[in-house]
Image 1 (tube, rainbow, N blue to C red):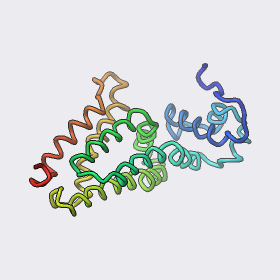
Image 2 (cartoon, one colour; image 1 turned 180 degrees about the horizontal axis):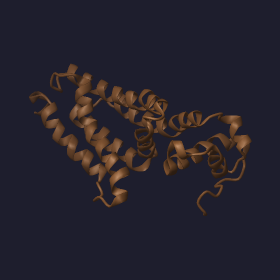
Image 3 (cartoon, rainbow, N blue to C red; image 1 turned 180 degrees about the vertical axis):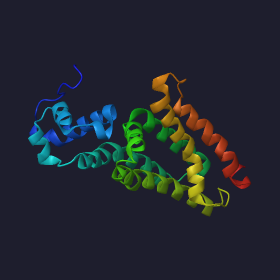
Image 4 (cartoon, rainbow, N blue to C red; image 1 turned 90 degrees about the vertical axis):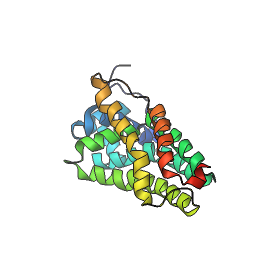
Length: 212
C-alpha cells in the first residue's frame, strides 16, 4: 500500500476509530506539530469535513489516541496488579513481563516519544500524558509496593520512589529503542532488560523474611 493511501473503506459507524488510528500513525511519523488534519483525514479515508464531525482539533485527536489506543493496554496491566493475590517477589516479575510486552507490541512508545519531543511547545500533551497514563501507571505500581510493605515483604521507604526505581530502566529502554536504535545503536531486548532489572531490584527491595 502506498504511504498515505486511505486504508479503509468509509463505514460511518467505524469512522471515529479509523480516524484515531490514522492520527496515531501520522503523529508517530511526523510528530504533533507537523501533523496536519488534512493528512489524518486522507489516511483515514474521510473528508476533512467528516473528521471535524468527530474531532475539532489535533488536541482532541491526541486525547482520543491516548484514550483508545493506550489506556486499554494499561487497563490490562492494572487488572494483573490488582486481581492477583501473590507475594511481591512473584508479582513483580509478572508485572515487568507484561509491561515489557506492552512496550514492544503497542503504540505506547511512539506516543511517549512524541510527547517527550514536543512537550515544551505543547504542554497540554504532557499534561494529558501525565494525568491519564504516567500518574495512573505509577499509582498502580506504588500501590502494589505499599501493599507489600504492609505485609512485611518490602523494605521501608517511600513506596513511590521504590516504584520509580523499578520502572525507570524501562523508560530508558523505550527511549533507546525509539531514538537511538533507528540511527544504528545496538538493539535492546526490552523483555530481557525488564526481567534482569526486576530480579536485581528484588534483592534490595525484599525483606529477609520475604526472600526466605
